[in-house]
Amino acid sequence: MLDRINNIMKKINPAQLVLLCATGICIVGFLDYITGYEISFFAFYALPIGCASWYGGQKQGRICALFSIVIWFIADNMTGHVYSHHLIPFWNGLIRLIFFVFTAYSVAAIKEKIELEENSADFDALTSILNGRGFRKKAEAILPFLKRGGSNSALSETGRICLCACFY
Image 1 (cartoon, rainbow, N blue to C red):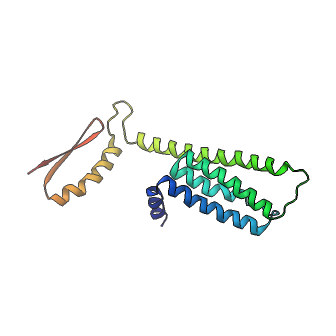
Image 2: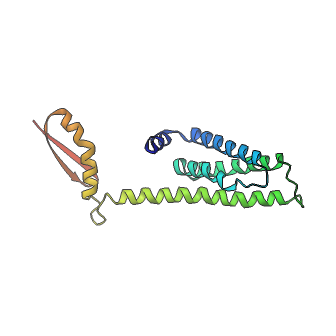
Image 3: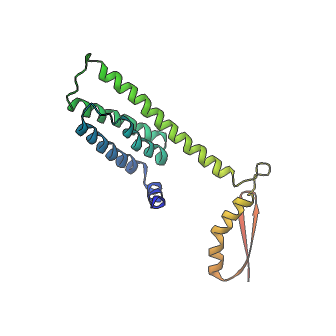
């Protein structure tokens, strides 16, 4: 089931992703409002921000971080939370914003590093051609098409291109 969700999320365009995550932020904000200011929902705002950063990148994560602060501020004011100084809510919002932007940056950076490692794991560092793992992945992707054609075939890898020769 998680694979299906992951595949769906990968296909969503950035605008739809931000809208979906903004909906999640609104739900968290509503729960924050219902529970009142005594119970903090601070960490739950990070879930849609992380989702936006993972599937969309830093830009979408930062957009959701800014939206989260607005929703938090509205929910906090609607609960009737009274502060001892009128600047305290702005300070709290700034601290939350810093945390949310850091979350967006961190999640996007981790995803970039994982993708880089996955890509570099398929190529030989010295020759920049496919290693055994990379060749196997390419072959597994190509072989079903070759078997469907019913032809005798050979696979070869030169540079970063996996070649297929068919013999009839």
